[in-house]
Length: 357
Image (cartoon, rainbow, N blue to C red):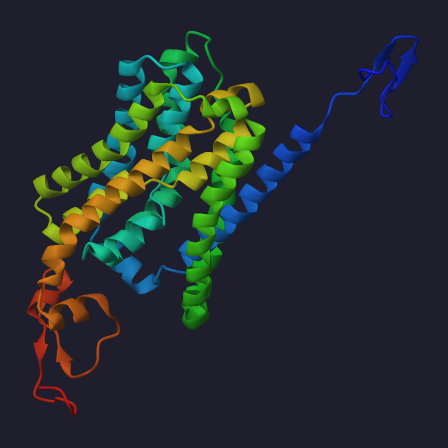
């Protein structure tokens, strides 16, 4: 009933001065729309990620998996453990702790491949690590959640929605597999899809922030603890990934690659899993954390790239060009070391083309 004492048009029961108005289902509809759009766009992002995988190069890393094994240890060993330690240290709510650990269990994001390019990293290793971590997340994410959430589950504080998480992960394998097939059969078209997917990934973050801001308005009243964890978590991933790779005797370019793959998580996947797995009341407490992590992982990666951009610009043009461009012209010869082509030893052959000194 409005201020004039007249029942509203959508009232279902009117009796004198009392009337019953049905609850608005706007939020429920918007939540369904958000879940559907997130799932669809995430499938497109993962499809484009598959379009970035070349089977021959991927199998080459699988046959000599030292770099991938280090990445696996960082991705599913260091990151979930770091998330658990931060959750306990800051004494956050159980549902918040679960989301922090989910973020730690997520595979690497496609942004890490782009950033590996800019820091002069090992692009093939970056793509292979992202692909492997995405596939292995199907089993490793539920396993890590089972291990690291026992503290809260055993005390009855929260129930982990393993069914929803499992369905979300299984659904990712299909678009990635199709993307790999498309790149194998139609590589030129795959490059276009890859660009579209990269743009879609950025739009997905914005969409999550805008629609999530309407749905879960109280979620923007963020506890300082979550801000601190969102800052420390990616920094710890970058640092620990780099030092572990260096400790294993990897080259500097591989160390940079492993560092990025460790700290740079698939925040779109985390947001989608959170949206599909938790109740609106729980989402009000946790929905913004993937966005916080996304902002700080990109900020810290930007600082990382900025610090390295000077040294990379000082590399001779020939070395910079042939490290970053492929395929190389046939007037370049390659000297091979144990890991394949070593761009630092690329030189010019006797068969020079016109205009090349």
